[in-house]
Each structure stands twice: as structure tokens, then as C-alpha cells.
Image 1 (cartoon, helix red, strand yellow):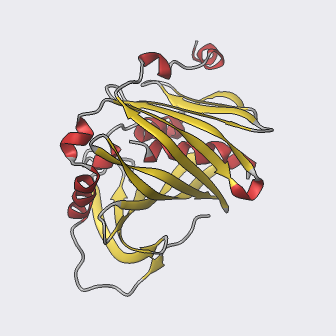
Image 2 (tube, one colour):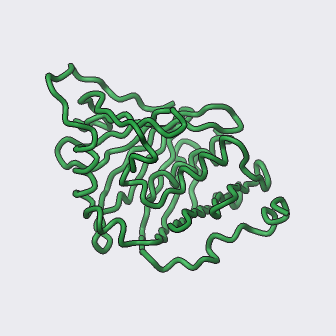
Amino acid sequence: MFLRVACMAALLLAPLYAQAPAKTEAPTAQLPDAREIINRHITAVGGRDAILAHKSMHGVGTITVPAQGLSGPMELFTAASPNRTHMKFSIKDIGDIAEGFDGSHGWSMSPMTGPMLKVGKELTQAKFDADFYSDLRDPKTYPEVKTVEKTTFDGRPCYKVSLKRIDGVADFDFYDVATGLRAGTINTRDTQMGVITMTIIESDYKKNGKLMQSMSMKHQVMGIEQRITLTMVEYDKVPASAFEPPAPIKALIR
């Protein structure tokens, strides 16, 4: 629910400032089926029924860019039916930054760019990344999945899984061999600065209700590391108003 939306923060801060490669081990004779690996993660976080039981999520935490001494509070809202997102954070000496998808329109606001609507591939990707049930890696979203190798990712033995998106581009998941939990991803996205590849490392899984949620994420993009730490997660308490675009965005929509 949170991972794909969280990558928005890395793209929003990219104009201010690469990915950490996975270390490949020798090939093994036989690798687990990709769907088995994904389903093991689903079971580890609480199960398919527990994931589908929720319709919205609210998260609160902090965002930091250690190399540049930047930090500030962040807040995230996500929901299903339709899939919607809204992430906002405030960075000292920079200002307020936000991005969202209201079910139809993708948008962003920052002191660097001002209010902007997403169009073309960026809008398509905003809709794709708003998938509230993305942990399920639905075959309709990823028509082709394949276990690539057993490798080392963030210092952990992991299975690397290729997920070919409906647009034909492949993202990569890494699943911890020991726990089954997803250790992170490598994603490619189109931006106004061109195609950007980012590595997201997930850790500090904690149980919130019936679901396990990664509470710490490191984003590595364009040679800069960005960290998101959640301090609170709650489900099914998000009002529809949380996804209303701000006035400057509404003016662009009109």
C-alpha cells in the first residue's frame, strides 16, 4: 500500500539533487517460482484477506536527506475504490511539497516547480502507483513475473523477481530468503528530467492491526539517499476530503 506511493517523494526531491546495485551470487540450480515468492510475502504480512479488508491508510512520519542535512515531517493518505493518493511533507528552508492522484488527475506542488498537472506517461504512472493493493502484485497489473536469481540486496540474501508492467517495462522486487518479506525494489519511472531509476530498501516491519508494514524506507536516486520513517499507521479512517487537490491545482484542472 505504501511502497509505490512512497517512491513519489524521491521523484519530488530529485530536482534538488543511482541506485545501489545488488550483488549477484553464483546461479543456483533451481529457483522458486515468482508467484510462490510473492505469495510468501503476502502471507508474511498478514495474508490476502487482511490486505483486502482495508480500504484506506493514513501514515505519519519524517523524511530526511542526510547528505544535504534536510529533514521534515511527512504525511501520507491512500485509498481504494477508486485508487487515490496524497503525500505531503515540509522541508526546512525549502517549503511544503505535495503530490497526489485523485482518481483522475495526477498533480504535484513544490517551491521548485510550482503547481503542475501530470500528463502522458507521468499521469499513467501516477495511476499505476496509486494501486492500494499493490502488495498483491496483481497479474492484471504485472502480466509477466519471473524469478531472476538469488542475490544479495542490502546485505541480505534475497530472491530477485522481475515484474513486467502492463506498459512493458520491468520493475524488480527483492524478497528476503529468510523471512519472505520484501526487502525492497528497483523501479524505473518517466519524469520531466527523463527516465529515472530508483532503489527502495524496506526494513523495520511492524504489525499494525492484522498487517505487517515496513516502517522504514531508504530511497536511492541520482546518487542521493532519502529516508522515510513512519511513526504511525492507521487504516480505514481517511475521509474523501483528504484527496481533494489544493486550490492552485484545481485552477489548472479547470
